[in-house]
Amino acid sequence: MDKLNHTEVINLLIQLAVMLSFARIMAELARKFNQPAVVGEILAGIILGPTILGTFTPDLFDMLFPTTGASAVVLDGFIQVAVVLLLFIAGLEVDLHIVFQQGKQALYVSMMSLIIPFAAGFVVTWFFPELFHYANEGQLLVFAMFIGTVMAITALPVVARVLMDLEVFKTRMGMLIIASAMIIDLLGWIIFTVILNMMGNASESLSLGKTLWLSIGFTILMLTIGKGLINRALPWINKRLAWPGGLLSLSLALCFLAAAFTEYIGIHSIFGAFILGVALGDSKHLSERAKEIIHQFINNIFAPLFFVSIGLGINFIESFNIQTVLVLLIIAFIFKVLGATLGARMGGLSKYESFAVGFGMNTHGTLEVILGAIALQAGLITDQVFVAILVMVVATIVASAPLMKYCLKFNKNETI
Image 1 (cartoon, rainbow, N blue to C red):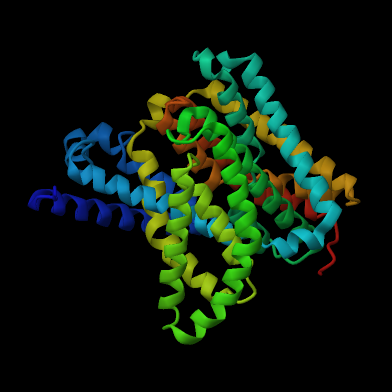
Image 2 (cartoon, rainbow, N blue to C red):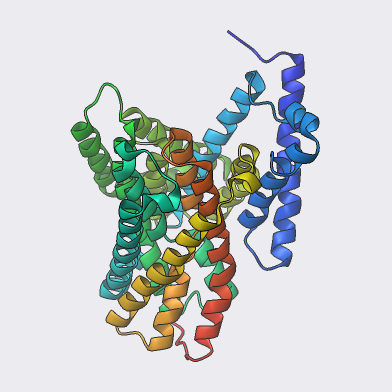
């Protein structure tokens, strides 16, 4: 069995130390400006990558982050695990009880917030692919669906943080935004499941039809029987095993098994991790303290590795295309906001409440970055499109809180 040699072990350990420490420094700096840690971690990767470090000290960059060799393969393994765990904790955020409590209002907001930006992104991409400098006509349908999906998704963890900062998380409007974002997460992953198959990610041993049926069956099974079994097992785990070690290790083991299954049937491993997270997070026996421990473990160790790694493979200055960036920003700030605002008005909210919902639902984040990274690795999108997605993500995160705050000045919220 091949092993890392002495030099490669040292290099890998230095890579991890540099990525984690610099990510923490930039995350704390982002927090000083009232921005989520993910913004600082992405900036850390840009600084450590070819954009800055590779431009000014190319020899140091090549020595620190080689693109070939065993250490590069092992680091990529760390990144793959980080992506799976990120989607696992994203699933933990989905509370199906809140979704059901919000009823028709959440359905109106989520559907309009999904359909209108998805249609806008698809139509613009389908009829004007030159705006994205896209020349692969054979995959234009998949590319258009991908852009539509990216524009439609709302970043649940990020918008939750924004609502907490504005002290409206437990208001009627806040709960509506959270419930709508949860629905969009679930539907968005179903759409992305189809896209992954169309991208050629299907298992070689299974047909497209079997893959789709297995993925649907897996989702239904996990959210019904699977959730029931988890509900029965958690009290025993909490009582009989060391806490929180037993819960943490078994939760991650189930996460990896679910991820392995969906990877086997041709759906990306992150889908299995996400659905398992939904089933586990919806259990009444998983305490908020246990969720917080899982979140802290993943968010402070594995998440920074993924977000820093984004900047290590792309020169953001060379790949920045103002035309592509503007197209995505226009779709986000017009059609995403319009869809969510119309849905809120249909649900009976006031004008300014509806606009606040629209700007809140336009918060993009982790999921879009992960989708973009997968699409880039698969060759579906170019570096220019990926950089434009990152710019759109950061712009919507920075803008959502002040725009919501402005709207809420004209509206009086009632606390639930």
